[in-house]
Amino acid sequence: MVQADQTIKDCYLAVAAADKAGGNVTDLLSTLQYAGMLLSKANLAFERGDFDSAYNLAVQSKAKLEGFVADANFVKNAAEHSGFMDFMINIVGSSAGTVAIVVGSFAVWFGLKRRYGEMGHAEN
Image (cartoon, rainbow, N blue to C red; front, side, top):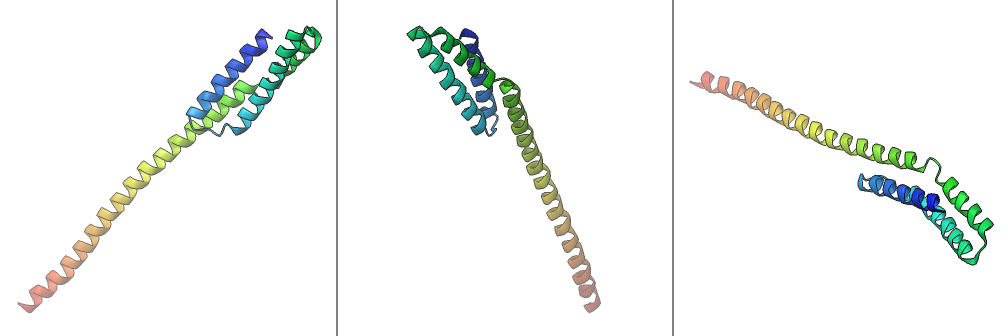
């Protein structure tokens, strides 16, 4: 049961890191809650002296979390990558928009200056 308890703690830390990165941890929390329920039942069975049930429930709890930390790390990495891409799109998009406005404004100004500048010279 000590190993199952430590596994749940490790998984909780992995979910907290994924959540902090902005990942969707709903499914992870559901799995973690179920494993925690199994471990809680194992602790109750142990306190009642039902050691076979306690052992089986602890094993089930630990088995439910097999590969869980890897899944949580995947969610964390995906969230970090998504956040980086959003940041880059905002920076590049804003920069490209600014350049387009400046270049477009300069082109319009140059065209108007040329057109009205020539008309002004023609009247003189």
